[in-house]
Image (cartoon, rainbow, N blue to C red; front, side):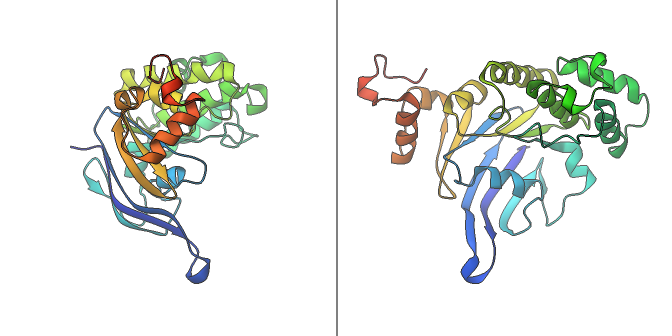
Length: 260
């Protein structure tokens, strides 16, 4: 059973003359355990796809399904037990007046995990590399990387099978980004997770994903294996443009002809 299916998805904002078509006829599928990347420049529609999946954008048409179950206009608790999202900004995604214990405890309670909440919280914090010592700290007492680890722990609390990752490291210091990416890679293996990851950084996608969809002006212009991207075996001119931009020089000037 395919983990995620998006078929002919259209997403728009506004009506009439004010309507903006943010996503146009997008289709992709993600297999269980796969890490799939959505790449493109800012405003290309990649984050909008994640928001449509989670029900944060109500104006859409087409078909979406999760683990074989078609999605309608609303998302129920069953959906959020299967699908969780890690947002871009760890500073904005945590309540400033709630301790880590409250953040995780409320999430567990919401999803029906009422037994041994203390043990579950300690396990979640250990899984993301923090440990029980961080339970009663407030967000302002944490670094950016630590906040994002708490956000990941919160996403893991309902024991989902799918994580939607919206630029999960772009708001962090460069020195911390690799730690979070390696943590996500380890968690994917340990928990048999499926990833749909948005990023403008091709190096991040090459590290994290097996397949990518390239978006331009709301449309998916190419879907390809990451290995083809590394070998610069691309079909669409815009994909070639992104690769050249990421390399900083034309392919023929590269000594190996590959994306490292």
